[in-house]
Length: 553
Image 1 (cartoon, rainbow, N blue to C red):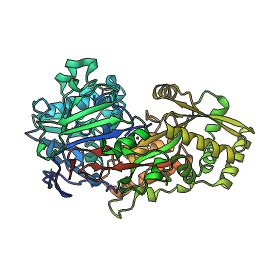
Image 2: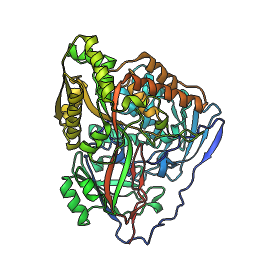
Image 3: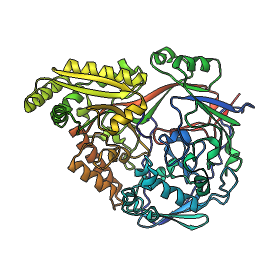
Image 4: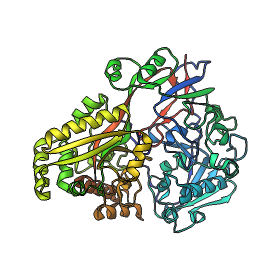
């Protein structure tokens, strides 16, 4: 889940300390445990944004591809790693070599076999800097991935190898406790070389310019169209557990039209926006789903405005901004939903300590820095102005132009100007293209953005703010923080408790320094038809999966 405009407890994956063979379950769950299945198995759901490609190396939102894409694993309920195209796997004693056995009946949607070579080609293509994958950093930890991304080694040196048609070997630089969960992300699915080469620059631009490894295949869609239609993949290895005959995903027309469509039975689920939330809270179809998505203020530490650059690089100024914001007021007034105040940068419900089962978010050590405190804010702001010899400041806050982001930006402007004397906030809302250009070119002081976890581990958040991260939009640099996170990235130890403590230390450093200012953990409200069963929802990574969805009477 990348920057978006993107509480089920997820156990931290267990690291196996010795060589072992992992046999995966065959998902022989009963087909229907909540009622008699309906004959009409056509489902239409609404999403907020359009899909621009089904090229897994280049797509931004993998949640949109889960139903048509499968890799070695899938995520089941509560973040459980379930079998995908891998039938079994073996881990070496040092936990740095994985050997996967693929299913003999794994097939593409055109009937051709899926082989280990398809995985090798896909991963090498995604990590190759010439592909310009926005998610290539997720390969870091696999042998040589970082050097390949930097152009120091060819993609052929990536630590992945086809040992035979159905045996795949992956070598890591160091043990990765979350590796199995990471491999459930569609980025790590196979790609068919001949198909990529056949369509060239048009690969993944329409339904017929791609073939599919997942339970469904696209039959009606082109880039940025308002809807897409999927039908079951007739060659999918587990097709007996795919019940829908047709899955249609339409882009939201407007909140009011979506609600009318839901009430008339045209769609099975919609997201509620603004005043729709309190108006529908007593509806039996109402449900809230928190996500591992933290909305934040990112600071541009390299802004071209000299005075603002000095202000932003002043720690007291950043602390004052954070302490001047009442997160509860922001949520109640601007969002009017069930979003959660932050306890730090890492979201609640993402990961639990596998020894004492405590949530990482609850153990974050600098929570006071992300809570409103007007007295503290006033003192820090006065200190910053005295240190910088200024009495006034004007900062520009840029944001996406959707209704929610605009309301949040305006609420922040009011709170900051009310509690920090002499500060003026100028808000600018932009469409996605102009916003991306402004961010890329560093043309902002403050940025309202967000980060969502790609896998259920705190490192998914922490590595974003290192100096060399392409998602560190404001170029925050802190040598101590870099060292702490790099220790995690290069960790050769299999001591999970040591790793846990190191992550807590890194998060504390980030929050104490306010490299970014967390605002709220997103939780969205929906109306969902209770007769639609079998949809998998998770807090991180791919949050919706319709593989085994079905209607009941």
